[in-house]
Image (cartoon, rainbow, N blue to C red; front, side, top):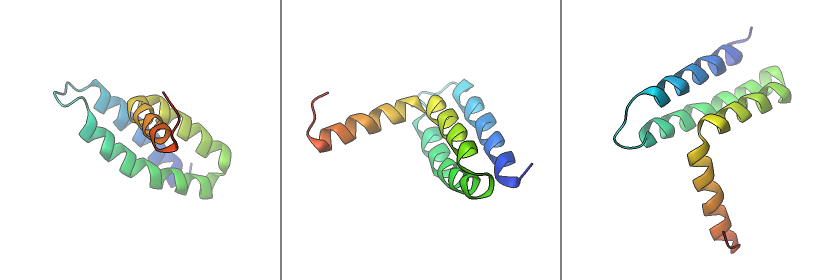
Length: 84
């Protein structure tokens, strides 16, 4: 196994652990940290293991960080001028 693959697996474990912790702030600080660490891991995984592993990791990340992704899609629609 390559280092980016191991880091991607550890990132998934950390994301699941962060989701299980009780939080008064709706897990947003953890989401920011996971996004900031997940993007470089995704790029590194793409260059080391190819696009299929990167797509699988991206799908796993989107499934775990679905609320930030929903807010991002709403924000992009608002900028583009499309109604919700």
